[in-house]
Image 1 (tube, rainbow, N blue to C red):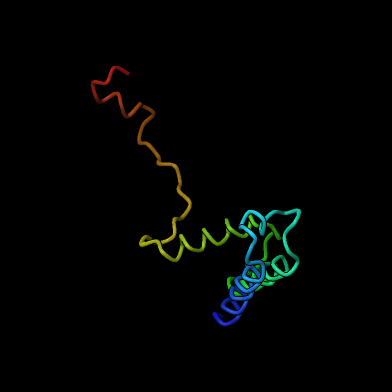
Image 2: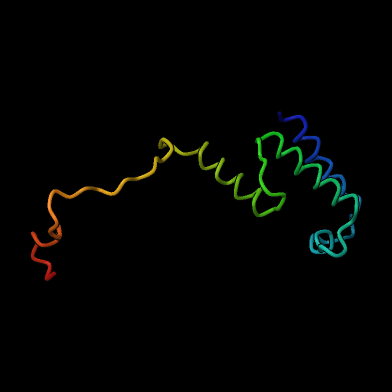
Length: 103
């Protein structure tokens, strides 16, 4: 799994290095992004999708949301949260009525 990601990541770094005098703002301007850098990022996106089983929309926002959710699942110390059902009350009184809270 790691070899394609590493190779594609290195291709992005190599493409950026080929434009040594360009700033990151120049490199990532959507109107003037160098073709080799764009293709390297597209290949990296495909490698990430394959490695993590992503089959959603082909947008950066959707992919990042998916990856952050996966990260949260993998790093959480708690088990995955199940859907919460509303608590059933024994009677229809306000639970605050037993306290002197002015309700």
